[in-house]
Each structure stands twice: as structure tokens, then as C-alpha cells.
Image (cartoon, rainbow, N blue to C red):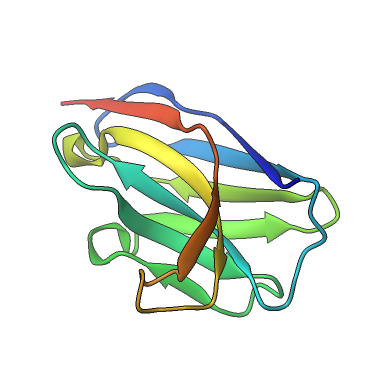
Length: 125
């Protein structure tokens, strides 16, 4: 059973940085699948923020985070990171680590097969 455990959320001032981590277990990294991050702000739908393929060669970023967020993975540690810089109040959300299968009709990161429990990021203005 695949498990995704997020960490690194918290309260941060606007303009500062935060790094989220996703520890992946029960899963052998798969050429067909990706790991990524969705987020859900209060009163809004979940949206794909960023994702990365198993080999790290392909990444996706939602337009509002391009140039500010960076996704990376350390396959030796079975961990995926989301480095968030220049944070804005509108980045406030619960961030979920996801494993996706390649089916772009569901989201820019594919079809979400597994969800983590989420970690809350609050950016104060």
C-alpha cells in the first residue's frame, strides 16, 4: 500500500520561504507515474500545483507559482520536495502530496491515485 506523508507546513509571513516534504513508502518509483502537490484553499476546489516524473525530467507548475516554487525528488530517500519562495497570502491552503497516473484529462498532473493527508500552509500578509 502506497503511503504519502507530508511535512513542513506552518505559518509564515508573506515574502518568506517554506519547504514541504513528502515521504513515499510502499511504492517502487514507477516510470509511468508521477509524484506531486495539490492544494486546496478555503472555499475553493483542489488544484494541481506541481508534479514531477519519476526520472525528474518533466515537471509541471501551475501558472501562479511559476518562478516561485520548485519541485524536486530524491529517489534514494523516497522523498519529494516543494520549495516555496516569495510566498503570498493567496498561497494559503492545505497542500496534499499525490501520486498520479498519466491521464491528463483529469488534471495537469494526471489522475490522482493516492492522496496524502495534507499539511497546512498559512501565509500572513
